[in-house]
Image (cartoon, rainbow, N blue to C red):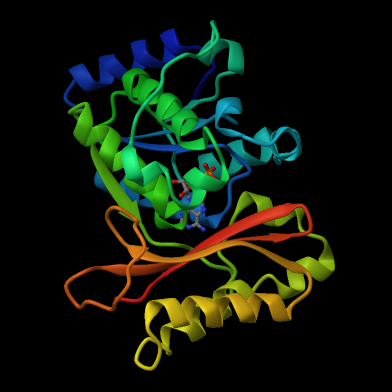
Length: 280
Ligand code: AMP
């Protein structure tokens, strides 16, 4: 595996490979790799000639200084895992390499960025779009793989690619969960033991909600889910929304023709976790 920390080395190497006709599969990450990340990488490796991965804890997508500071980092462990999945190129820049000057680009994703993660974490998706656009310019991937765990992020990236006609195929990948149902996340490492014990309730509540779509309309189901989270005093619900799977806007009715999902963000202590489930 080649490990590069500069943009020049990375794009020189990969553009040469592209010139030789090799297809590049790319998985952008913030490191602290787990099985969720690795599932994207295995698929990218399988479907392309070269696997490129980036590890960059992107400061401009954090709206909370403590979250950025506490974000887990373990490059040695990550490198070993990347070797295991057959990663060909790791791009691991520092912040000065990515942002030699203060970043001023402002994207407009309309209603898509005004709900849920966009509403709760101001500037988050702009920071995500800025870094992903830059990474696409550096890596020039044929395909890029994103997890449905961050479903709204995936929708934003699809919109970025559509809007700027970027020559990359976005491949959505299913959520990988722990045995007890908790969606894998680098932030799970930060949970206290007692918090980790109740964390699986997040996905349990979502699963049970899915069984209630026959008897409750979306507004009633939202109330029911909110009540379930309130029963557990350690949870602090940030939001639960029932929304369509394209524009992520709230739906009033169950409509078989509209893909409909439930989205949750919840604090356990200082750790904010997100999850989602498809209803229709
Ligand atoms: P992150 O390092 O958190 O920025 O995540 C990098 C990529 O891995 C994103 O596309 C995430 O959606 C994806 N990812 C993170 N956790 C999971 C998971 N549990 N299942 C599937 N994909 C995931």
